[in-house]
Length: 133
Ligand SMILES: [Zn+2]
Image 1 (cartoon, rainbow, N blue to C red):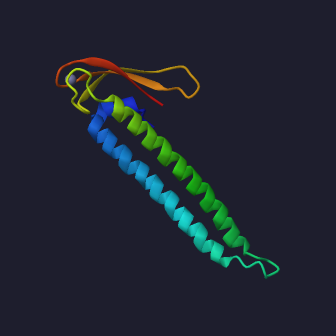
Image 2: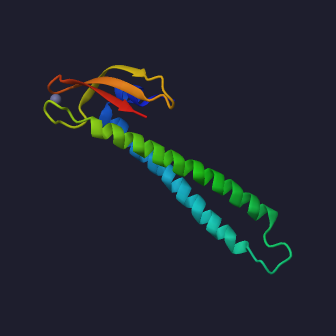
């Protein structure tokens, strides 16, 4: 899986950002559909029966819960990272948004390995550092 810096260097910031938004919302929709599936399967629950729910329904609820939790986690992480980078991709020299060229990139040796990029504006060649999680 490519890092944000590799993706931005390959696609350009605006295309990378658009793809991040699309992919993160696919994760959101997956999480939402899992929530709907869980609610539909809960219709099978009847506490008056000796066995309140079939094992198949219970297994599907557990699987949907796991897939939904992972999907919502990925949605929040991907969207948060894209927004964090978007806020930093305004040129401090001419205030143009998203027209950057990646000059160099690296990983900070810390807990979650945040990444950094040295970028320059395609319009005025101003350089600055951008960091992401
Ligand atoms: Zn600029």
